[in-house]
Every structure is written in C-alpha cells, then in structure tokens.
Image 1: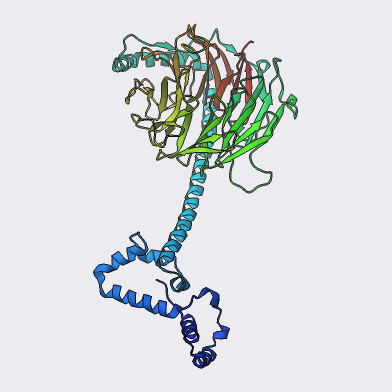
Image 2: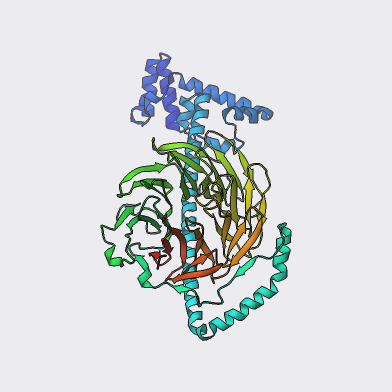
Length: 565
C-alpha cells in the first residue's frame, strides 16, 4: 500500500497556504519545515493537491466504513481481484497528481511492462530448454554410436548368421500380429517384408563414389538441393548455413571445397556472447534463386545464392522449427517453439499474418496451395489455416501424441501426418476423421514423405505411395488408395530419421543413426547401394536430376553420393 512521508505532507501544506493567500503563514511554515531543501519537483504537484488528497482520504474512510462496497469501489480502479498488488505499481505522488482514470491507466501500463518482463524470462528459459534437448540428443547419438561400434567389434564374426536366425524368428513371432493389424486397417493380404539377409547384390559405396564436404564445426541437421542446379545448402548447430557448389565430376576431396566452392552464411557475428543460433530449417524457393533459413534465435532469413543477406524476418519469440516457401514464392510460413505460425510477405519483408491456435510448440508446417497451409504441434493437434482467416478452416484431433511431421500429397488433396503415438494418418478436408490410420510401426514415427508419382506429377503412371520412417529402425511403404501396408524395409539397425524418393519415383533413400545411407529399388524390392559414414544421419535428399544424394551427419560433415556409380 502506498504511503506519504512527512516531507511530502509538509510540502502540500506549504502549497495550500501559498495558494490560499496566507503569504506570511506560508513563509513562516516553509522556513521552519525547510521546504527549500526538499527534493520535490513543484511542477509535478497540481494546484489544490492537499484538498484533493484530503478528499481522497475521506473517500477511503467512507469505503472503509462500508465494507460491503469496498470491493466494488476498488474494482472501479482495477478489474483484477488482487487490488493490494495493484497498489504496488503506484507511488505516493501518483495518488496526489493523478485522477482515478490516470491511476487506472498507470497500473495497466506498469502491469503490462511487468508481464512483458516475466514473459521474456519464460521465453529465455524455453530457448535454453530447447537448446538443451538438442544437446542431449547429440550426446545420446554419440553414446549410441560408441556402444554400437563396440558391439560390432565383438560380434563381427557371428553377425551375419545371428542376424539371419533372428530375422526368421521375428518374422515368425509377429506374423499373426501383422495379420491382425491389417484386418484393423480394413485390408486383406500380407505385406512384403524386405530384409537385408542377402548382401551379395548390395553395392558398398566407397570414398571414390562420395564427396565429403567439410567446414561445419557442429552437427549438420538439414540439407536441401537447389531446384535449379548444382547448389546444395546445409544448416548446422554451428550457427551457420552453407551453400556448396557441387560439380559434375565423380569425386571432390574436402580440400577442393575452398572459398570458390563454399559460401558461409553467418547467423551470428564473430566473438559474440549471444545465445545459440543453430540453423534448424532451410528451404529453397521454386526457381532456386533464394534460400530461406530458420534458427534458434527466432529469426528467419533470406539469402541470395552468392551469400548476400536479403532480409531478416523478426516476429517469433522462440526458436523456429520449420520453414517453407509457397510455390508462388511470395510467402514464407514459419513454425516456432512460441506456439505460433507466421506468414511472411517476401516483397514487403514483413509479416503478413500470425496464427496463434496451438497450445504447444509447432513442429512442422506445409503449404497446401499458395494461400493455405497445415501446422502440427506437440499439443497433438493439426490445423489447416488460410491467409486472411482468423480461425482454422479445418481441425484434425485424432492423434494421441506429438505430431512430428505432416505433408500434403502432390495435388494438395490428402494430408499425411505422423506422431509419437506410433501411427501415421491420412486426412481429407472433406471429413473430420482420418481417411486411413496406419498402425504397423512399433515405435514413434519421426518423418513421412509422399512419392512424386500418380496424378498431377511427372510420373502419372506410377501409383501414389507414402513412406514413413520410425524409431523402430524400419521404413514402411503404404498404398494410400487401398489403405494398406505394401512392404516394410528392414535394413537399418537404429532409428531412421529421414527418407527421400528419387525424382522418378523408382528409388528410395533412407538415413539412420546407424550411420548408414541405404538406397532401395522399389521395383525390385531390395537394397541396391549402401554407404556407411562416421556419424548418425539426420537428413537425406536427392538432386533434381536424380543422380546425386546428399546426407547430413552428426559428425559435422555433408556427404554427396554419386548414384551413377
């Protein structure tokens, strides 16, 4: 509760005597009270301040005498229930110099500033926690890699025979389970199990077939080929993105990737004490002239192919986890840990609209067309949003766990999603419930991809497929039209973080924490090539010609595999 000092009261009495014409009394009182030595700024005290103060005191006494009306009177000053806390935002001079409306505005402004400071502290804490999760993941990956390396060394002589018998046992023990799951999905027949028991036809890629791009100083978590040519972009935990120019030759050593072949996009100034600005998301526009990046500082950035920073887009209050261009290249959508999605106008370099529907961090975003997109979150929800609309145009709520990834099919008709609830689901805007609910995985599903096949694609004569990658170490292919599992690809021994179809839809690449990239022939239903590196793999992607595959590794490198050899 605010109080008044004797010095302040004496000054009010002195001013009252002056204003009332009692000149001599004012002089005598001022001399004895040492008014000329007090620090009060007289310009801040309005005329009649003592009378106003006494009147307010009388009003308070009246309020105190009538307890039944106290709460109503105080709520006139401030609508919140804890009024004593509101008075902490006031100073004695505020009560003297301001009327009830000004006091109300003062409390409101100071409360708002206090809440802003509290939110900033909470966001800083969220950033630290989010960064901590990534660092914990890195430690787990490295620990798992060390353990697996030890196991390989000890068990290598018996590995093939042991794997063969185990695969047979697993297939036998789970046969009935698979049939039950197929019946739940409303399909008949048995899916094909593609294993790697026979390795005689697998081509092991060597250093002659691989270009190793060195330069990052932390794990590389994202990579993307330019749609227009030989440029490859990568994003890392070292606060940089890099643009690599990949030649048509079969191999380039890391020493050849000097300044002419590598452009570094700094997301933080050198020798800074700022918090981590890990680059978490990258995406090229459709003609490959601009690269967008998202990072842990909550900012999106747009770069030219020669490394010039064209725009810095600032709106989010937390790390950006996902970022996508629309096909028209006039908008970018970003999803953030601050629970919001923001659409940015590329021409004006400002935000177009902010969507605040989720109650948890947004994990993925994907455009349906040039004006509508979908978002997924840790809150288990999926929202379909449209620019200009203040509410979601569609809500999907059947998932029971965090929704890690979502993707629209090539025509923008069906939406696929995958979750920690161990399911992948297919959705249509025509209905509220999912069209298909795929339950064949045994652990969390990390990512999904549609094949570039079927109506509206460059491969219209091939069927539309969906691939899902899981922590159960498998990749599964789904026939979406019939709603059934086509086959399970069981070549990896650790969680699979990434899958990618070749542009012609005939091959599939997968990357895992087991350090290997596997290339599958979908026509022959087998692994045809394998490359094993020195770190877990977070993402794989094909170039537009379909002759090169890029993979980003936890040991700070990007590898480019030559598919032609």
